[in-house]
Length: 403
Image: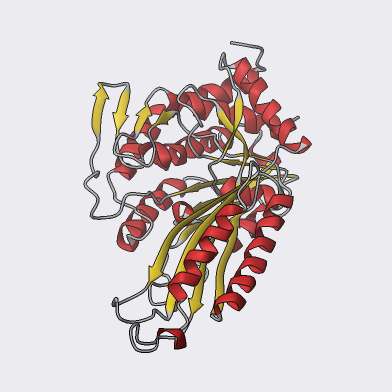
């Protein structure tokens, strides 16, 4: 182990000693299905997590989700229900303010067959839904904060915790809360799992934009008077091809689905194109936004259909700014002093770290456990990483408080 002060050693030891309790919490939370659309399951796990976080000082509440809408297969804009979000505020008057975030939802719906925990290697590797992404990360966050609260450093820093219920579906209903919580913070940690099982962190992240583009045409009989119709399905196909043709090395375009159409003897008057964009710079995000607006307008004119654009870039690109590099360097040095090799790499995946970074706050968004195969029935947790990552967080936080 590297050079730690007496105070740092006590904090690290306290974080590591919380391993067993954190692992028990991880298992209990992972056994509750909290798929993003399972509102009952989300309410249950939110209550369990709130009870666990109640040991921390400050004001804790479950916040109602912000309104969110989507376009259904019939082209109607409809409201989407979401679960509530946990929000904790501790010592807002303290000189150093930090933000810690996580998510309680998983990608596994209530009727998914992957619902239970299984040892892959007894005592070492555990398979389970959301155990790594990110029930384990939430437990790591709590263990680290408990260690800091038990130290003399506690009065010197304040923080907010946001654990949302919708990260896996874009965090649309928690974005206002996340933006509010990020304001005025020195730095943020998000507890997504490490990018690789060896503990490599995610550095720069691509941005992601999701659009549902509805095209309204005019129906007609396919045999008697087809030229009187305006085929919305053909217009959507043309739009998909034109958008895809704009893809290059710095902008990914993925037309993913077209809803619409009907009987073979009717010219379809409705189609909805679903398309995703990925990019690594704000300039490319702006280019994608112009591409959508200009191409939709052009296709609408050419096919004489009426368009409606829904959606946008819910996750802006997260570049490695100088402030971000400084924060990653702090975590890397803390890791070295714990005999952990910490590296990072760019990724095309997105998370709440994208949105926190967009507020100008530096963030490391993979402070959670080590494991792998997330978003699949093979998802696994490396159990030893719970105490390990709690110690890494606790030491990193301590050094943010007393740089």
